[in-house]
Amino acid sequence: IDRFRGSQQWIKKRADIKDRDKHLCQACLNNLYGTDKRITTDDLSVHHITPIKKAWDMRLDDDNLITLCRYHHEMAEKHVISARQLREIVPPMV
Image (cartoon, rainbow, N blue to C red; front, side, top):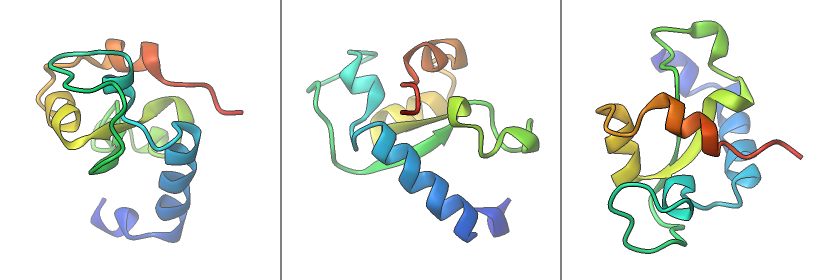
């Protein structure tokens, strides 16, 4: 997994997902859990909704990836925000 996170394949996919999500936290945009401001562009990361450890074959699936701010990423990692909720707000690739 660590090797994958440093791969060109992941670096490109991560950039593609941030572009798809317009470099905005999708949880903030959808006013989920403790949103301070609806437009969050700082400290963003791309989150695997179904973790790589559980589904290696989904590691690059667009519908398994979402851009989140640090606050909402931590909530997603702790399952405070469910995978179902995240899947509902994943924008389509255009």
